[in-house]
Structures are given as C-alpha cells and as structure tokens.
Length: 319
Image (cartoon, rainbow, N blue to C red; front, side):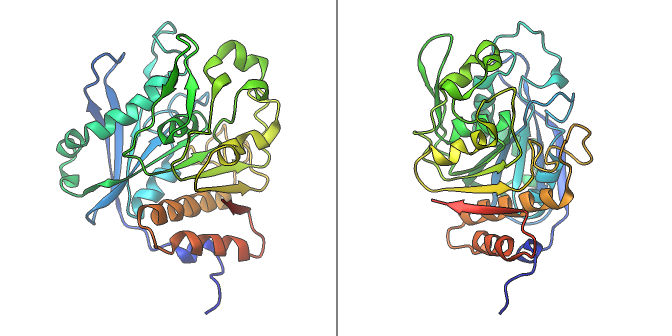
C-alpha cells in the first residue's frame, strides 16, 4: 500500500462538536471564579481530556476561553474533550494591575488546570451531555506561548519563585502527555533585559525535571526578539533540554502564531497559513491519540504523511 498523499488521509472524519461556556468553577482565594469552555464530540464514551492553556497576545478575547478554536474544535471533533480556562492574565477579565500575581499569573495558570481536574464532577454536572463520558485516566495538557510555559510546569518543568527564592514544582501526575506550542525556552543568559525587568520568573526555567512525554512545536522563523537573544531555537529548548520521550515538530517559515492557531482569521497572526494550521491540528491530534492509546498508529502515520508530502511544511524529530 502506498503512503498517504497528505496528512488528512491519516485522520478520521470529524464528528459534530458540542461546546458549552462559560462553565463557572468555584475558586476560593482566586481573584475571580474560574470560567472554562468545554468542547466535546456529541457522541462517544470514555473520551480522553485535553486541558488547553491560552497564550498572552495583545487581543482582548483570544487569550481566554474564547480563543484557539482551530485547535479546540479539531481535537473535539476527533474524540477529545477539550477544557479551556480563562486565566487571570486574560485581558477579558480587566483585573486591576495590582492583582497578586500580575501581570502573567504564572503560578495561578498552572493551578487553574489542577483545579479543573479536581472539579471534573462539577463540570459533568454543568454539562449533562458529558455525564459519564470522560476517561479521567487519559489526560493531556496543551498550551501556546505563555500557555506553553503553563503546560511545561504541569509536565514537570520547574522554576525558582522570584519572590520567595523557593523552587516550585507544579507537576500534576494525572497529566500523562503534553503539547507545547511556541513555548518559552530556558532562562539565564538566553532571555532579554525586558524579560529580566518584567518577567523574572522566566530566568530560572529548568526543563531537566520535565520527564512527562511531550510534543514541542516550534516555528523556524519565531524569533521572539522581545523575549530571547537566541532566536527561533529558543522555542526548541523544551525538547532539547528535557529528559525522557519527546518529539519536536519544526514548522518551516512559521512565526509565533504557527500559521494562526489562536483563532480563525486573526489579525495579529503574522504568518497566516491555513495549511500550516492544518499540519499543527493533525500532528498534535495524532501525537496525543497515540500517547493516550499506546500502540495506536496515528502518530506514526501522521509523521510518515508529513515526511512524504511533495512539499513538506515541517519535519519531526524524536528522542
């Protein structure tokens, strides 16, 4: 049998998707209660879960439960329950600048995801169409940009709290795989003076403890000059500097938006490319599918389809 001509050939037909928001989860001690969007296929049982952490762009609503529809819709249409929180860093909340943890709320972002897993019963009660359909033993996390930093902490990366000097471990053992999209890399001499002055928590990021399997997605034109002096390779640090089973998808000519993963027709996407987004959709879905179901051929089939395409939009490495 010949290899698939295109990655689409490796993905089953999409199912209709149910999306409910906002689902409000009580969050004592948080500035506001936690709001999430829940997206799921309308049929199927024992559905694995993806926690999706938004980035920190300058738009008002993409960085919230209302963003990342190209990913959330695709993953839900292909068998996952996708849960998207609005983190405290979201402009949509209009929180005062002196809110504890501002501006990026790096710690509470990870705690939001743990809170979601702690309250799956409440989510099922709020979305009765989901009752009894979740597979709580199969949980993954994904995040773009600042959301990638959040995901890395949940997967085992650590940092030193700049306020206390204590090492912070926010890993959640219930999460067994992850996808890091245009995620920040290491600290130290890799970051800019702007980061040192404004986001000092980035200075101590340590990937040597990030043992959970993960797919790192990086654009080879994602310079992120306001954050790093290393150029696009900085976004590959979570792959190169972490131990254990990892994969790296490098997207050719992709910038920080990876073609437009944060939303449909987004003005702030500097490299809009629907075909590139389609590659991200398919490869991330296939990776998480095979991680959730060891032995499932989706990941290998998607890699083969990418490699044998007439004009590949990226390449995959593994270790």
